Image 1: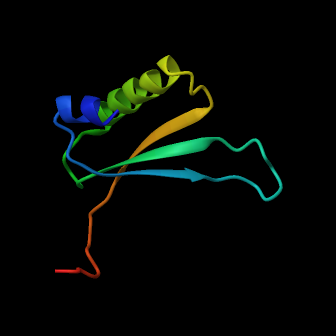
Image 2: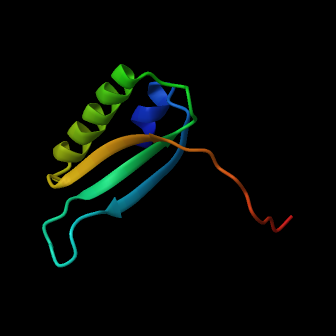
Length: 81
């Protein structure tokens, strides 16, 4: 998926996994959030990219995983050097 995002020129800041749903509901889907720098892709391009990423997952037998694009910035709160 990272190679695909790079090939599309997506300015990816993170790939995060999450699961949201109602308490006690084990059927909530896993979501991969693709973080992108704010303002770098249109909504239409984001839909296409999310769809292509979902297809990549499906080809590798990950059927119950959703993909969503979100704007995010990286802020370093601490550094070792």
